[in-house]
Image (cartoon, rainbow, N blue to C red; front, side):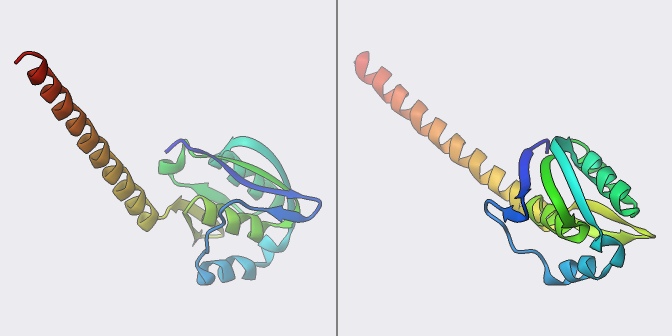
Length: 150
Protein backbone atom coordinates (compact mmCIF):
# COMPACT_ATOMS: atom_id res chain seq x y z
CA UNK A 1 0.00 0.00 0.00
CA UNK A 2 2.42 2.69 1.20
CA UNK A 3 0.16 5.64 0.34
CA UNK A 4 0.55 8.97 2.05
CA UNK A 5 -2.86 10.36 2.87
CA UNK A 6 -3.80 13.64 4.43
CA UNK A 7 -6.18 12.32 7.02
CA UNK A 8 -7.54 15.31 8.82
CA UNK A 9 -6.75 18.77 9.99
CA UNK A 10 -8.65 20.27 12.88
CA UNK A 11 -7.73 23.85 13.49
CA UNK A 12 -9.32 25.67 16.39
CA UNK A 13 -12.10 23.13 16.55
CA UNK A 14 -13.03 23.36 12.85
CA UNK A 15 -12.77 20.07 10.98
CA UNK A 16 -11.53 20.23 7.39
CA UNK A 17 -12.09 17.17 5.18
CA UNK A 18 -11.44 16.44 1.55
CA UNK A 19 -13.70 13.84 0.00
CA UNK A 20 -15.09 12.42 3.23
CA UNK A 21 -16.71 9.02 2.73
CA UNK A 22 -19.62 7.65 4.72
CA UNK A 23 -18.74 5.06 7.34
CA UNK A 24 -20.81 2.24 8.67
CA UNK A 25 -23.21 3.73 11.20
CA UNK A 26 -22.98 0.57 13.27
CA UNK A 27 -19.18 0.75 13.54
CA UNK A 28 -19.28 4.46 14.37
CA UNK A 29 -21.88 3.89 17.05
CA UNK A 30 -19.71 1.24 18.67
CA UNK A 31 -16.70 3.56 18.78
CA UNK A 32 -18.71 6.46 20.18
CA UNK A 33 -20.20 4.21 22.87
CA UNK A 34 -16.82 3.25 24.33
CA UNK A 35 -16.33 5.66 27.27
CA UNK A 36 -12.54 5.32 27.00
CA UNK A 37 -12.68 6.85 23.50
CA UNK A 38 -14.56 9.93 24.74
CA UNK A 39 -11.25 11.32 25.97
CA UNK A 40 -10.05 14.31 23.90
CA UNK A 41 -6.77 13.75 22.08
CA UNK A 42 -4.31 16.11 20.45
CA UNK A 43 -2.10 14.68 17.73
CA UNK A 44 0.57 16.35 15.58
CA UNK A 45 1.66 13.50 13.32
CA UNK A 46 2.79 14.54 9.84
CA UNK A 47 3.44 11.60 7.51
CA UNK A 48 3.30 9.04 10.32
CA UNK A 49 3.05 5.30 9.96
CA UNK A 50 -0.37 4.01 10.95
CA UNK A 51 1.33 2.07 13.75
CA UNK A 52 2.63 5.39 15.16
CA UNK A 53 -0.85 6.93 14.96
CA UNK A 54 -2.32 3.92 16.76
CA UNK A 55 0.39 4.08 19.42
CA UNK A 56 -0.23 7.79 20.03
CA UNK A 57 -3.98 7.19 20.32
CA UNK A 58 -3.29 4.38 22.75
CA UNK A 59 -0.96 6.50 24.88
CA UNK A 60 -3.51 9.31 25.20
CA UNK A 61 -6.55 7.09 25.83
CA UNK A 62 -5.11 4.08 27.64
CA UNK A 63 -6.75 1.85 25.01
CA UNK A 64 -4.45 -0.65 23.27
CA UNK A 65 -4.54 -0.52 19.46
CA UNK A 66 -3.05 -3.18 17.19
CA UNK A 67 -2.42 -2.66 13.47
CA UNK A 68 -2.57 -5.50 10.95
CA UNK A 69 0.76 -6.39 9.32
CA UNK A 70 -0.76 -5.60 5.91
CA UNK A 71 -0.89 -1.95 7.00
CA UNK A 72 2.75 -1.75 8.10
CA UNK A 73 3.67 0.77 5.37
CA UNK A 74 0.44 2.78 5.45
CA UNK A 75 1.01 6.44 6.33
CA UNK A 76 -1.29 9.24 7.38
CA UNK A 77 -1.00 12.84 8.43
CA UNK A 78 -3.10 13.45 11.52
CA UNK A 79 -3.36 16.92 13.02
CA UNK A 80 -6.07 17.17 15.64
CA UNK A 81 -6.57 19.33 18.69
CA UNK A 82 -8.73 18.26 21.62
CA UNK A 83 -11.07 15.97 19.67
CA UNK A 84 -12.67 12.85 21.12
CA UNK A 85 -10.58 9.81 20.26
CA UNK A 86 -13.59 8.02 18.79
CA UNK A 87 -14.01 10.82 16.22
CA UNK A 88 -10.36 10.64 15.22
CA UNK A 89 -10.58 6.86 14.96
CA UNK A 90 -13.82 7.11 12.97
CA UNK A 91 -12.23 9.45 10.41
CA UNK A 92 -9.15 7.26 10.25
CA UNK A 93 -11.23 4.18 9.42
CA UNK A 94 -13.41 6.00 6.89
CA UNK A 95 -10.69 7.81 4.98
CA UNK A 96 -8.20 4.94 4.96
CA UNK A 97 -10.93 2.34 4.39
CA UNK A 98 -10.07 0.32 7.47
CA UNK A 99 -11.93 -2.01 9.77
CA UNK A 100 -11.74 -1.34 13.48
CA UNK A 101 -12.76 -4.32 15.57
CA UNK A 102 -12.74 -4.91 19.30
CA UNK A 103 -9.93 -7.23 20.33
CA UNK A 104 -9.83 -7.98 24.02
CA UNK A 105 -9.56 -4.67 25.85
CA UNK A 106 -8.47 -2.80 22.73
CA UNK A 107 -9.04 -2.47 19.02
CA UNK A 108 -7.56 -4.08 15.91
CA UNK A 109 -7.14 -2.02 12.74
CA UNK A 110 -7.13 -4.00 9.50
CA UNK A 111 -7.78 -3.37 5.81
CA UNK A 112 -11.41 -3.43 4.71
CA UNK A 113 -11.65 -6.43 2.36
CA UNK A 114 -14.36 -4.84 0.19
CA UNK A 115 -12.19 -1.74 -0.23
CA UNK A 116 -9.21 -3.91 -1.20
CA UNK A 117 -11.33 -5.67 -3.82
CA UNK A 118 -12.49 -2.31 -5.24
CA UNK A 119 -8.88 -1.10 -5.36
CA UNK A 120 -7.73 -4.27 -7.12
CA UNK A 121 -10.58 -4.02 -9.64
CA UNK A 122 -9.70 -0.38 -10.37
CA UNK A 123 -6.02 -1.27 -10.83
CA UNK A 124 -6.92 -4.13 -13.16
CA UNK A 125 -9.19 -1.85 -15.22
CA UNK A 126 -6.38 0.71 -15.48
CA UNK A 127 -3.87 -1.97 -16.48
CA UNK A 128 -6.17 -3.22 -19.22
CA UNK A 129 -6.84 0.32 -20.47
CA UNK A 130 -3.09 1.00 -20.68
CA UNK A 131 -2.57 -2.26 -22.53
CA UNK A 132 -5.32 -1.42 -25.04
CA UNK A 133 -3.79 2.01 -25.61
CA UNK A 134 -0.30 0.53 -26.12
CA UNK A 135 -1.65 -2.07 -28.55
CA UNK A 136 -3.48 0.65 -30.50
CA UNK A 137 -0.27 2.71 -30.70
CA UNK A 138 1.73 -0.32 -31.90
CA UNK A 139 -0.85 -1.03 -34.61
CA UNK A 140 -0.63 2.60 -35.77
CA UNK A 141 3.18 2.48 -35.87
CA UNK A 142 3.09 -0.80 -37.76
CA UNK A 143 0.70 0.76 -40.28
CA UNK A 144 2.97 3.80 -40.70
CA UNK A 145 5.99 1.50 -41.18
CA UNK A 146 4.17 -0.51 -43.86
CA UNK A 147 3.13 2.68 -45.68
CA UNK A 148 6.68 4.08 -45.58
CA UNK A 149 8.19 0.97 -47.18
CA UNK A 150 5.58 0.27 -49.88
